[in-house]
Length: 302
Image 1 (cartoon, rainbow, N blue to C red):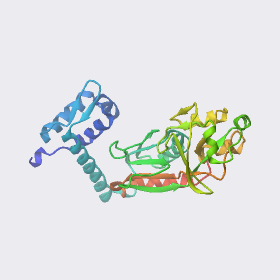
Image 2: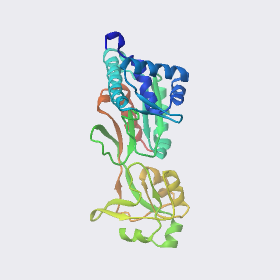
Image 3: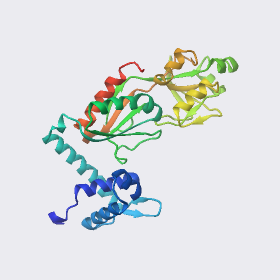
Image 4: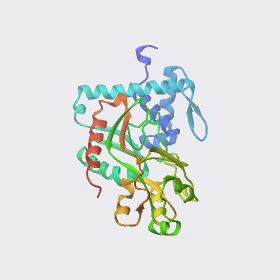
């Protein structure tokens, strides 16, 4: 491959969008171009590299083996290009351009989205995309710059910065406790209706907490479960059972008596983390956003 045959950065960027969206049409919509242009540029990229990058079906596209290798290198090349621009321009101190971040739905709506609204006014040259996802996220494969996560961080290959302290607590409504009785020890939860959530880092069938005897676990269950924390919160207020939820979420309901804390000696650590690829450690966009969110979360919730 001679210099004239090397792939264009624009084509590599478009290829990464297609991989993330798994669709030419969805990629074209996000990029604001025609389907025909996306198809043409991917074909040119495949011709330049002399390999087939994508399997195409009527429903979606997926990576070939060669495509997987090219995608990994394309992400690195595009990140290096961004860092080069930061190093030689005002971008190193003034955030501008794309910033893709994700977080869970409840925390995103209630705490992150209001912060992003203010951040966007302070830095109008930022192009911010926020996605609310109640599932595990592969930060690099899905093309996110930043994940704001409540709970555990297991990926050792990513940078993780704690930006707020938080814990999950057990609680239920006064009506439920009057009807079913108040648990006196962790094992009592086996005989109670517990509202289970399938969200990010949580094991839906087993609650791991720290109490007077150190870390303990209890298997829980009940007739209701969901992947949405706001529904869990409301069902608990409605009297359907015991929940394990972040104090940032249930704090107001505990304060006004709609919920009562159960087994107050027990809690689960669930700090808030900003997680991003090591290659973005010097990104002005990521740095400014993370610091802004840390300062924002240090203030009392409205």
